[in-house]
Length: 321
Ligand SMILES: C[S@@+](CC[C@H](N)C(=O)[O-])C[C@H]1O[C@@H](n2cnc3c(N)ncnc32)[C@H](O)[C@@H]1O
Image 1: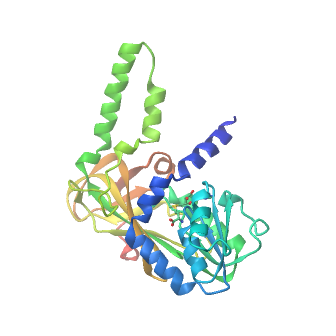
Image 2: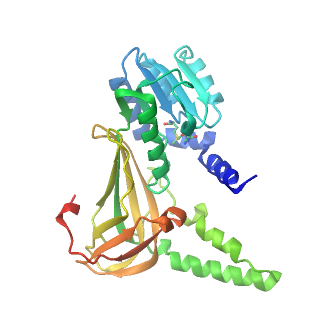
């Protein structure tokens, strides 16, 4: 297997959700009910609807209940979705197709659609860059002009934080100590394993989530307002992410983390809000009144760590929310 094939397999396995993960997502009532209500309001009888990343098929089934002809696509197993369609008497109106959305063509799905439901996100700005590119491609290649897109906007805001239990330096030192112990006991070099640990942080490095699905942040101190980062708009052609996030500091402290919020919206109605974290590498002492810039670069994409620096230019009013 080539490195490229191995990488694609790893990405595929990582993006396939297990039944218990679908259940956890469905238990986020505010998300499910907002989506259900929205679909019943905007999907009309006779529409052709693509449910991209259909999972258990719930959005496809709500669209079918609204009278649409639906194609639900997912690269994960679709046995549950198929059974759900039968159990709810909607099998006639929904067709499920196991495929990678990156490889869909109009021929594979019987032509273009009047509406796209694409709840394909990891709810993390960094990992969802590729998902947004994918959704833009679906909009371009598979929709009729003027088709409905759910969501039609992904809005990212972020907050600069001092978050003692999320300190990267402490973790790196712990890894270094473990590496030295391993090398001492086993008479082997262990930096390849330790480097990899930094590139793909284990789940235990991330803050836990509360009942509401948000990150638990009891020891977090905010050093900036919640500040706009960027918007993805599916009504317009795709644009790359900005290269930097620039934010005013409103409290003194050690900036070691950025708390991201992602909002999935349709015509300014919120469908779902979720949080994720990136770590500052290295942490930076900041003072109230300064402006800080975080690089959204290859390091951030690879390791989820941000290079932060004091922004040299005077703060521009155009960044105001
Ligand atoms: C967050 S789940 C949402 C499931 C369902 N739409 C819902 O709202 O409950 C995202 C789904 O998108 C699927 N997915 C993500 N990227 C995909 C791709 N490139 N091709 C096919 N399916 C994909 C995943 O397998 C997963 O089932």
